[in-house]
Length: 400
Image 1: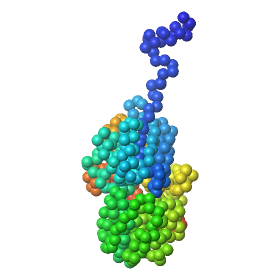
Image 2 (image 1 turned 90 degrees about the vertical axis):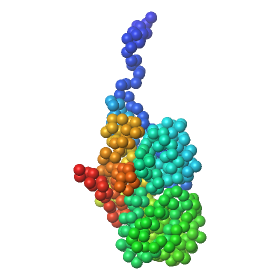
Image 3 (image 1 turned 45 degrees about the horizontal axis):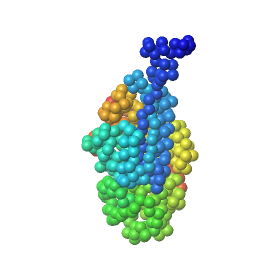
Image 4 (image 1 turned 120 degrees about the vertical axis):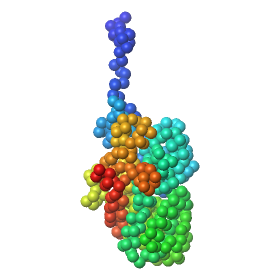
């Protein structure tokens, strides 16, 4: 027997690990499933969200990974197209949980597909982050669900109050929302917010997602002669088309698009008709509040998608950082253990400040991310930040 073979036999006999075996501290992978629209009107949101999940995972790895129990873990983001529908959301849920065996959903988008996903994640012990705006997915019944961006209860009241104070002549408002779970749940909160500032809701209409011809809808809105229109959960491309048709009809009221996430999407379909539109889910990166990391990632986003980074996408980045922080605090990669400590941690948000999870007073359990509410407005074809409202609950948490 050759000397090399004798040595190998000796090592095996002694129980010594072979040279080509994995090292003690080998990297282990935690899959982060993403259920997002990668086609249709919401595709930009989904593609950008997947990008920021990958960017955050790369940052975690560059920083040494997630250190738990003497092991080093890193994240892998796996995205599927839920097409913003319940049916496709169900397919994605089955794929992620049954085929890919994910234990963590790094982000999910759209109330209808998220409901389909949540029906499995909660039952099977999978922790889920979501940007879905429907309040029906939160509460003590859903201990493994956490919201990774501001939602109607956080956004609509300050946004509508600001719009009313800036335009005190507003007495009436007309609603238009997508005819799905997101639109239906947003409409309920928006009605309360407008009525809270003394504005009467004169009409609430619906349209199917994917609609491209809004002229008949705009005619109906214009005939109401409301002082303002609130386009609710309409994504930027669809909202822009509505505003363009309203301008063509000579309507000149106040325009509010709560879920508009940036200038590019609105301008692409609405042109100069989007001027003076108030938005509640957008953020700018050319002012004094922008950080170097935000500007860097915004350039990456524009190059990849043609549009600026927005609050929906930032939530997918923040979820990754929150998971790392919670796993290291819990010293566990088990979903239930991580979920238990998520309400206890603070972490570095991409907004350039600390973030945490709270909202128990509103939802009955602390599962809402605490980040600034940013009110913006289109000035011509440019998006401008008007006000940044910090979370009072987060301030108290940090001050302890």
